[in-house]
Length: 445
Picture 1 (cartoon, rainbow, N blue to C red):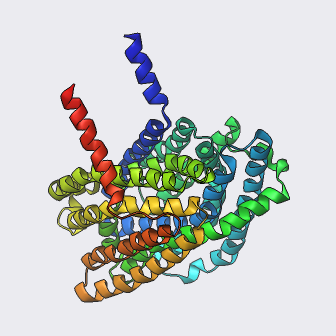
Picture 2 (cartoon, rainbow, N blue to C red):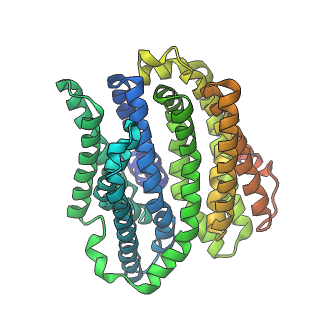
Picture 3 (cartoon, helix red, strand yellow):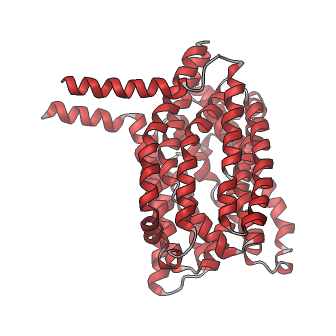
């Protein structure tokens, strides 16, 4: 009995398990939040809220794109003194970025009265306040990921999302659900979480005076490349939102986004294993084991792709049910289910895209990722517009997403050939052989 309990405890404490569990829990809570809002708001109101959050997350990407990868790279495995310098220097850069955006928000705030579109108006009026109340929360998530404390990371994210759910539920019960109150609930959930991490000492703000010029420059020199890649990747997703809002309207945006939102099923393992893959890839690279770097990358790509195949098949049959469950009856007679089916099929290429991009960062080629994402962004905008004018609905945009995905996989594959030669089929062959061997071993026992 104690033997099995010990094994269970080891599994639970495993970083891969904690990361996967954390992302799964957050995805479920995210779906609950999305479902509550989809049922409570009209299609048009939901489209406006999606535009606001998409706009804010695009601005947040400048901060996270500049610092997150750089922070983890220099923080993980560093000495205590060096780690404290990295935390303090990261806070210094993050604060400068935050104050810069607040400075931009001041003149933008006065333009709010001249803009008739509610989504643009909300974004101009509130993005600065949202940016500052979320700063300690953001820095704490960086620290916990760098320390691989995925248990604490789960606590922090759960407090943030669960508090938002509680506030939204309260608004529904009292019959006061509207965009303004939803926005207040959003800000309050960030404020509560930021206050929690500061009081717990998990944000690192208490180390602010320990910054160093050397660490600031190291973070800056790495971040100036990674930020371009991250912003461009986010613009890639945001371009869909803007094009749909401008050409098809807020209701179409809500429909398209619901089909896309359910891709969280795919994002759970991708985010989880990306968080745990970077240290192992970095270790192999730092030891000059080129072949091992590619083998590690291939392991993640192959296994995740194989495990995603059943999810893609199930989505073909259960898409209508999933859309009705999360979105409610107002979405059931729309294109949302078919959009979900298309995205799930295209998602089989996502592991190759994600982990080849991660490997390029690890081997110090963030510039390749930046150029790749810029090409993807241009292709996405061009084919989105072609899709809208050709089909006149959101199917045109859904089909257009395949083009930049193919570009991403192609660029990643050819760029890595200069580092270590490998065949595309080898990304999947080794993992498939591993799974077959495990099954055969089980049968024999």
